[in-house]
Image (cartoon, rainbow, N blue to C red; front, top):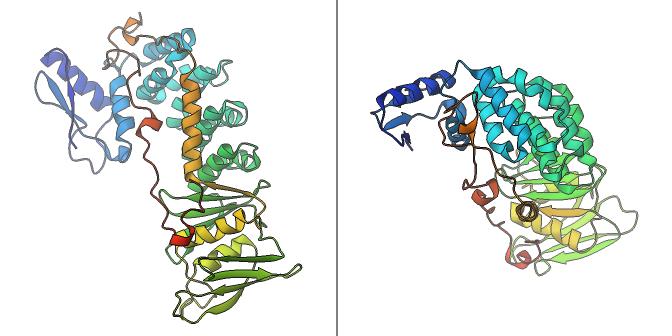
Length: 402
C-alpha cells in the first residue's frame, strides 16, 4: 500500500525540507527500490517503507510523524523533549517516539533517565533506548521487569526479548518464569522463546503443533492459538495424577492407571467402525502430549494416537477439569481479557494534559506532526484481533475455557 504525507499548506520548500529530513533519518537500504521519501509536488511526499520495517509499518509511520526537520540540532531537540517530559509525564508516549526518531545521537541525553524516580518518564526513555539497542538499557529494564506496574513489567520484558544477543538479558529474565503474576510468566516465556534461550525445549509434533517445555516452579499449561500453534508446559516434571480413570468423546478415548503405576493405559478408537488400540504412555506431560499428537509411521515408529491440535487440547483440558492435572490451565483468550481489563482500569485514571511539541522554545516547528499528542490514535488493544477458534472435536467444544 503506497503511503503519502500530505502537507497542510502547499510549499515546495517545505516539501523538499521534509524529503531531506526523512531520507537522512531513513537512508535507502539494500533491496529498497526507491528513496524512502520522494517529493511529488508542493502538496505531498510519497513514502516507501524500508525493508527493515517489514511488518512494522505502524512504527515507521509514528517515527515519520516525529522526525525533526532540522537534523543538525539533535542534541538540542533531545534536551527540549527531555525537559518537557519531566515537566509533564503524561507526554511519555510522544516523547518516546521523538527520542527514537532522533536515533542513537539522542542516547547521551536520555540515558540518565533510565534510573529516573518517576516510572513513566523512565519507561519512555527505556523504550527508546531498547529500540535503539542501547546495552546500557538492559540493567534498568531488568529492574523494571521486576518492580514496575504490571503493564510496564510486561512491556520491559518484551523489549528485552527484542534486544540483540546479550547473556545478561537471558540470565536476568529466567527467574521471572517463577513470578507470581501469570502474565509476567507468559511474557517471559515468549521473550526467552524469541531469544532462542536453550533453557526452553521446543518440539514439533508431526508439523501440526509445537510443544514447549518451560522450567518453572509455577506449574501451568498454556495454549497459544495465534501464530504457531503451541502447547507450553510450565514445569518439567508436571504429570498426570494417579490413580486415574477418565473417558471422553463417547468412550472413544479412555485413560486408566492405578496408584504407583509409572505408565498410563490409553484406549483409543479413531472412528466407531475401526478396531480400538491400547497403548502405554509416560504420564509426564512433556512425553504424554507428544504421544497424543504423534502419528506412528515407518519413518517415525514411536507410539502415538495421531490427534489433531484441537483434539490434543481437548484431552489435556479434560484431564485438568477432572482434577488429574494439579496446575493452572490458561488459554490465549485469558491474556487478551486480562489486557482489556487492565486497559479499562487505566482509562479510569485522570489523564494529565500532553505537551504540545511546537511550544518547545529550543526547536520550534521541530517535527512533522502538529503536536506530540497521541490522542485519537488506536491503541494496541483497539487494533488487536481475537485469536482463531481451536479445531476441537464436537464432544469437547464446550470444555475449553473461553
